[in-house]
Image (tube, rainbow, N blue to C red; front, side, top):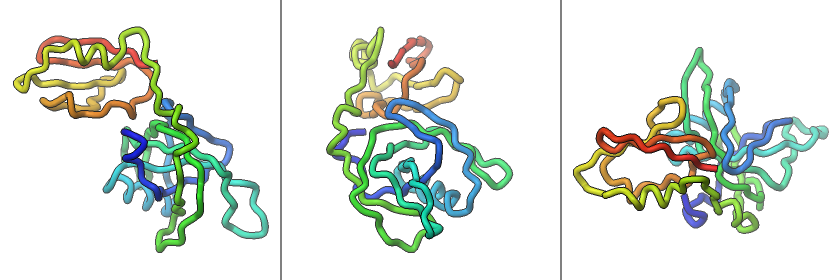
Length: 187
């Protein structure tokens, strides 16, 4: 995902004593109705939510938010006993411009990503994704399957050149091309 493709208004999940960084993955247990609504809405659109620290509560039940949070993309989703278990991949930090009043149970913020261009620079070692992918003999007849280290399919299809893998966190991945498997390491 490119910076210019990111939304200007995002749902935010204020979560005390918990942070996410770009290029990391965190598990979350979502059980409050307002955040279940947020995840439902996010899954119907772009799968993006912002994680941000709330400031200490004042007299109000709605805590102020710190200025900077991290935008994440839901990469794994499971419904268990009326709650959601998700994995969130950190994409980039954001700065809150203002909170948006809406008819949602959860909070929305207008944000900017302008101060965090370096978050989009991905360092890959030792076999860069782009080099490995560019070395493939790409054919529209070949089937590609991108798999994480747990064996879960992340993406499958024929046209790998048009797929954006920049949202992936660091780790070991495998790319199956027909009957051949290529190991990729992203750091």
